[in-house]
Length: 176
Image (cartoon, rainbow, N blue to C red; front, side, top):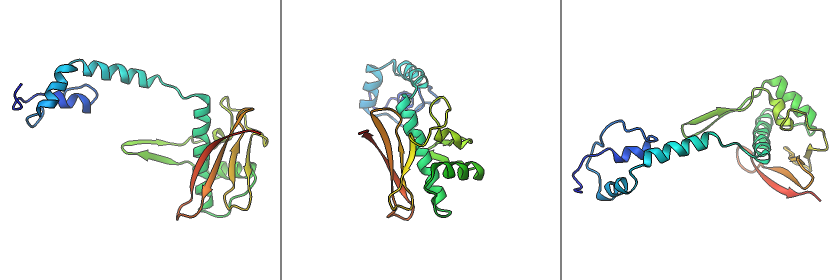
């Protein structure tokens, strides 16, 4: 094929398989060849989108995400004053303060749960007791968050206070 053909092949990969208009410029020969080799790209994209919609996080992944949000909430609390080193006091402060975080990554936006209780609970909504979700304080202004969500592993979120805004990192540790 000549590189002077005007086709819609490039739009297949940019809009999930819906061809909206012809390409506004001649396409390079390589793109035309890819469109010939993969003529069913829109169908493959559609099937992949259907697959992606049905994906669900593992229980560990969901708890890990909750701990990351809890850490973000702790950073917000720390910006307003000293953070208590008792989980129940932090939970009460967040709940009474109506804390919620708006996130965005590129064009994707989402909000944390309006009820912060979820970040202190297991996957069926029971509050963790102090032997499962607790602070490992040390002398840090923001203590490490530890969640012993199973017998063998725990999540530990540590805060780095060296930058202008505290950052956090969560690791998975073996329970001893």
